[in-house]
Image 1 (cartoon, helix red, strand yellow):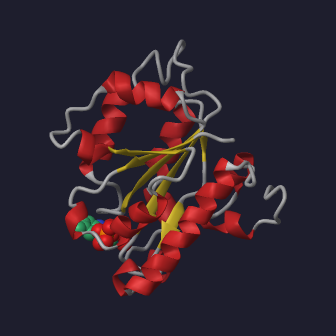
Image 2 (cartoon, rainbow, N blue to C red; image 1 turned 45 degrees about the vertical axis):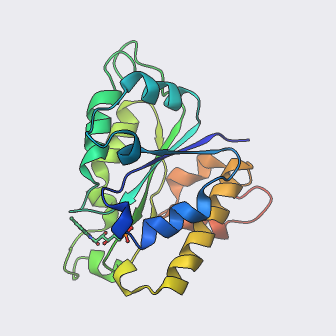
Image 3 (spheres, rainbow, N blue to C red; image 1 turned 45 degrees about the horizontal axis):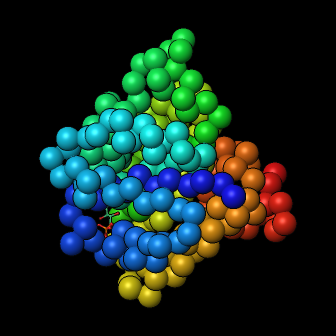
Length: 203
Ligand SMILES: Cc1cc2nc3c(=O)[nH]c(=O)nc-3n(C[C@H](O)[C@H](O)[C@H](O)COP(=O)(O)O)c2cc1C
């Protein structure tokens, strides 16, 4: 079984429609660790040792968050700045994360159409996520294609429930080694892993 860690960040979960539902749907799945960063560290005072231990115990690390200003809520940056230490995560002796998989799971208010050259955001989300993929590379991790739920402003509660069930299904397949994580960096979106041939779900 793959050990999956979800580092979750939402600064106002009480107002959330999407992540509240995603979280409710995936909470308690065996073998998946949910680490709610704002719940643990409301003052952004991150326990680096605890976070590093969590990373060491998992194979696939996902950052789950709403897309905010083409990036992530502030605690994700704080987490990266403090936890990925030189000599531990990167540098000559920094091999703690070697061979792990790292990826973003995001919800975006806008549709995919708006993340194209003629759209209001002009660039694909992949370009906005470059700091994460390069961070993964520097830390000797493989960057998985992002899992993206687009157009959430136009989704009703039924749409959100369906999206949450799909996400849960994908996580279970990952956990059960029914998706080969080595396939994830080669996809455009991690969402496509659900469509890969069953049995191996690798490409
Ligand atoms: C501060 C802020 C910044 C946002 N920036 C973006 C953005 O850059 N691109 C986008 O598509 N949506 C953006 N949104 C919309 C959020 O992504 C959307 O509200 C969120 O994914 C919904 O999830 P929730 O219901 O769990 O809060 C932003 C929303 C807020 C509050």
